[in-house]
Length: 139
Image (cartoon, rainbow, N blue to C red):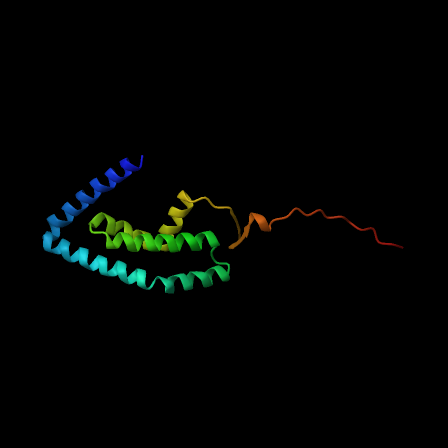
């Protein structure tokens, strides 16, 4: 199954690169590859700033730990895709850098055990059963 995905990716990479070169010439394609590779390396070198910002969001309970991990992971994957030569990989890399897209992909493909309620989240481990017993006042 992985071979089929790779062949589809390879086909799309060739088609996108060919169409890009038809419009912007091979020199433009070469310049695009250089610029995207430099951007990918820059993002990887400075990813700790993004991780720090997202860690603060976790501490403020704006995002869950799973979202923190998936956003960081997809940002790293997006930077690596920018380094790989080709126009289709650059398009995917740019999409992976956007947090809403990364969250959407994570919700689709990564399992989650978090329960969301009014912008707050609770792990399944934090939820307990409670029994309320009314106490009769003594006279």
